Length: 84
Length: 220
Image (cartoon, rainbow over all chains, first blue to last red; front, side):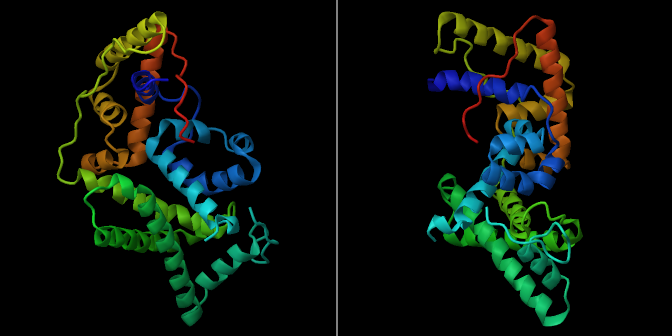
């Protein structure tokens, strides 16, 4: 996919958002620690099944998605295998 | 993910999380020591967030970033202690606490580049509708859909919905920055965006456009 095409599709995605029910930002923050631990322990499909609406919200809300990515990265960094 | 046996304090808490709660609810030196450990934990999370974003922050010196990380840890400590009774044990205590530090640091990092800048609330970067990639049919469909979205934004949204959606989704103003300027909250503005998106989808569907979400760019 070229940059130009990504620009058009990404813009449509940002403007139209996810086409499914999603959590609010407040509910996302409330549940994000549980969701990330479930993701890392049991996989994203299981986490999505147990916390419906989280994945859609992370697709639609860039700020919450950034903080989700940071928490995932931090927990990865905490693991003994991270070699710190 | 490491697991520990449940704490006696709360059946759903792992031992380490239970120990955190007990020590933070204790009196005297034991509590002070626990608060110091918690602050160190939050400071590490804030520094981690700063380091992750450092490449996107040209012109910031190390002292600025250290100060931001420390301030984030301080603010997160206040938030964690205030919400301690809200910790349900659905995750480890440290994971729960981390999210407060990451939030504080992320919000501060998003706000700093916009300090003193006017926010672009009008459409600035509508792409050329002759988006050059894909088959001719795909290009035409995409161009038509973008034109229809632009028209729906003008005709279906309230002035407030248009302003918020355009600023955040089109002009990439961070939602926390916009919330601060408008005296609102991230949650309230996201609700505005959510409602605006629903209006746009309804209009597009009514006009016969296929509005299946384009494939997301794999950021997760």
